[in-house]
Length: 116
Image (cartoon, rainbow, N blue to C red; front, side, top):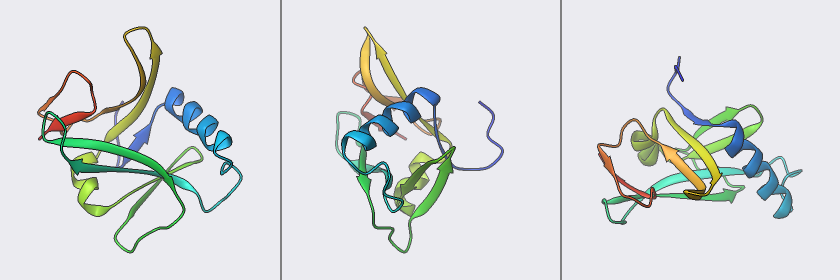
């Protein structure tokens, strides 16, 4: 994938799964709801990813729209997540969301933790 501008991106598989989860949570038709992604300290490599549905945009939030999925992150997390793609795998070797982060110098085996 070649990015022409800095952002946070979502793959087609992840988009479909997020849409399904928003429907199951009853917020798919609520225009104020979006996917919030972020980075927190912890995990086996030092930093961990977090994701949740939210409906409150804070003053320093960065907002991205990827084909109908609004992705929001705080400014501090964006510094770690710039040009990262959220993906989803339902294969035998790992099921769930994962981040393809070009800023990570290393990541752990679980895929939920990274270092820069």
